[in-house]
Length: 134
Picture 1 (cartoon, rainbow, N blue to C red):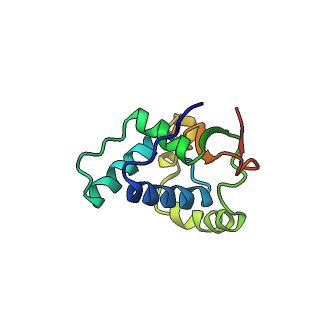
Picture 2 (cartoon, one colour):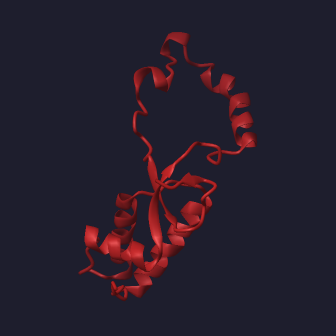
């Protein structure tokens, strides 16, 4: 039976979990690198100069808080219909000062190729309607 280690920096993990919950409540995808980078930032702000967010630390953090990475399956929860409608209504005004040959579709040039992760971290057993287990 595996033994789960106790967190060496409980205040850091508390901040990181609060941030993680806020991001997931907004349906933002979170990868391992984002977790590690934010852990480093919180550690610096909390004065933990000897903290290092290694891959081992990330695995232990995920195990302690029951976090898994799951495959994203669609954009149905990304934005509200109201926000999209408002943006579409304002688009002609935004494009007014540009000539048609200066307007590109990002899909045409591949600008956003792999811009978002295909997996996100979630609490195990939650958010199944938003992500698909792999």
